[in-house]
Image 1 (spheres, rainbow, N blue to C red):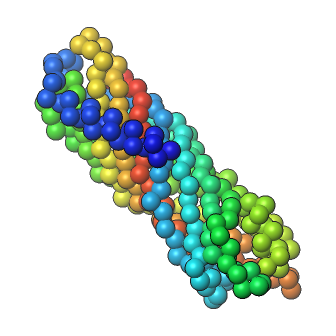
Image 2 (tube, one colour; image 1 turned 120 degrees about the horizontal axis):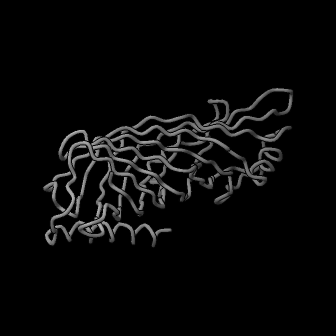
Amino acid sequence: MKAARKAVTVTAIALMASLGASQSLADYEQGDVIVRIGWGLVDPDDDSDLLRIDNTVYLEDTRVYVDDGDSATFTGTWLFADHFGLGLLVALPFEHDLDVVGLPTADGDLLGKVDLGSIEHLPPTLTVQWFPVCKESWVQPYVGLGVNFTTFMDEKISTVANEYFEDELGALTRADLRLDDSWGLAGELGVDIMFGRDTNWLFNAAVWYLDIDTKAKIDFRSRGDTFTRISTDVDIDPWVYSIGLGYKF
């Protein structure tokens, strides 16, 4: 995954560096619509607070990790003026494995990295894009700034984590995991490369940074017929890398 991320980054830089060799063909001008389909990698720059039991007991040295995920991406741009457009990023659900470290045992030991479960999410992102070069260029780099909304689904707790809750915390039922939806800022950098003078097909490479902050809550019924909640605030804050093909209408 890390190698793929670096390869996409190098490709984007190399393509943008080729700007000086641009030639004339179909303009990027007001009213144009560009649609793109690609494959994206979500690489979280993750962090979390300590896990809390019922908001009263803090589990020292604990934190949650969010692994990489990849999926198909779909982006579009509507140029509402020369050099300026509205961009939309959507995708098929990204799936991420979750891990947790530092869970205490009855013997006073701390567990290493343990499989916590998995989640899926959708990160629709809307940006205002700026295309700085002349509209006749066949290489069209762009930057964008906007807002991201992330919704989570299909959250699952692993068997290993459920056994821990049963053995150490007295869980009587399987745990239920939920993550709150998130709103945050988004930034992007991308480039479109037309395939030739007489075609509207293009190659695209892009990278986004998304501010995704959420609260994770784990609930289960415990001894004494009460409910226990384990919660923590998780910063996912991923870099999203995508390469693909597009068409300009």
